[in-house]
Length: 430
Image (cartoon, rainbow, N blue to C red):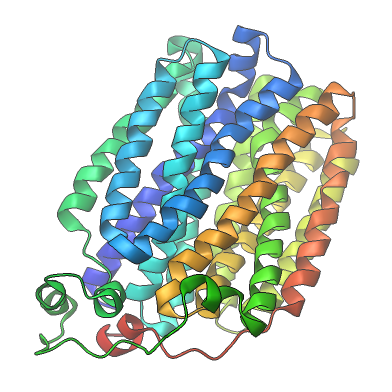
């Protein structure tokens, strides 16, 4: 894999790191915001879910535009949108304004998280594709750790709004990087054939150490529409299973990512210990991605996802049982982060191989959109349960159930044999 392809993966990694910061920052600001505005558990749950609602909308309605207008312009537009929405959040003066700004942030992130794994898959050789996608997914938990560290550093001295300003600056700077360095996907240029496609391809190929081409290669033949390709026959069953797996896995993940600091505090820990628990959750996620990328060489994605989902269910049970003991509870939180990240990373790595190039981003966008419904509902549900005086232990135990369901759904998915991705096998050096 050449330096140029690695630079593309690096840009995608930087973007997801920044978006991980933007997405997870609210979890670390939640306690301060709730105290400042006197929010109930239900109101806080809605606030934590606002960005997730936006991600669902972005995945469903914005991400498919990448298959029509291109990966590059969509990524650039979404980054600009997220950066401006973070500025809006930093000047919010009410619960409603902050909720709207988080919704807008989510819409932009929703377009990005469906598009970036496809860019990486299309610029990576097949034998390294899984490792590159998994490396990319570490950006989300690293961004979460950065959000916690910045919140700890700035909240007491400058207020919670300062953390949002930092996120806005980084995201807007990435717009410049993408504009200068991000090429268009070769797969997109081949199958969509926009004006100047051949010139764009020939501008990219030498940077990858390959010779220019005289004419555009023939695209893979397809006569069906995107939705028909996704939902007809066996693809329909596969899409249903995949979308359902995303629903339950992301519901559990975003419950833990959003509510862990707050629930640890409600179980008797200090505010600092609660934030530390949230950072440990993300640290476990980073370790999971590294481990998963190594194991993916010797085991199938399906097996790794099934084992990870079952491990996550057991880890939630461990947190529920061990909340009375600080050290045990924090270790269990690391295990939750580890297994949850492995499960979700595995699903992201699995999804692109389920569909042909012309619907790849659209299909992943649909799966993520359905998953976001679960991620939206889970923080709201937890807020309601908190208001009804459910104990933190009972809530953690409850969320073991969707992970067991995830394991069953993934076990039922059958992966089709697809033609190799053009950029990964025909144009990218190993």
